[in-house]
Image (cartoon, rainbow, N blue to C red; front, side, top):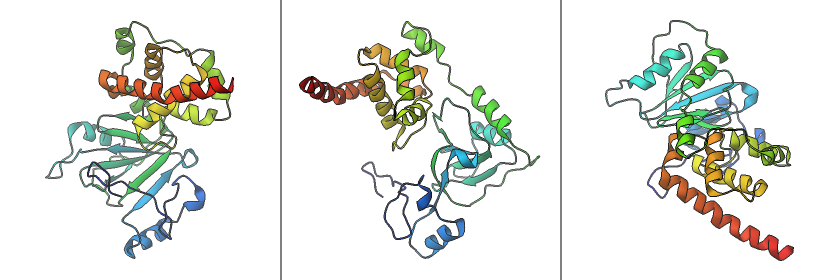
Length: 263
């Protein structure tokens, strides 16, 4: 599906051609059936639904192949860490997908040119990328160690705002135990939770935080976002965080007005 910025969005489709939720098991097909649809011209590609049940983690490396097909040094370090994992070219031809057996710990999910997908939808090509394999075993231990070693350092950013990291307050417990607590926890841990982009996820998380913590100041909202698993360098860009907080306040204002009328 064409986007306003000129790129093409990857919309999951059912066999009859209508959009579907890729995480709904009722919409899933076998690998063979999906590729048959592509060969028949009914779809442009195949997507893989990744859920906690299958204990699979995809590491999406963007723009890591040059025109000659050489791998950039950061991407090669990832491949070296996960020798034996399945590696393929991404649909763009300039990126790589690394599929690792194991569940990824809570925490960061996106950094520049790197995205972790352990609950979502990944378009795949089946075009395996040759890389020398010195061993066939790869497991959750490798994934946990790599994830921890590349976690963004948040202490300096919180200190810049005049506050060290500290545990969330009582509002956090109430939010986790609410009827939509599963969505809140997913957003807090850095997942998309049904949101089309990470930025939309930031917005939805802040709206939920304000619902349970209505007296939170703008600075406290920033602290909460930095303390969550959504942390990535973009959150430290003042223009981005200011726009996001302003958008949350605009969306929250009508709700507060409606509440005052009902009171």
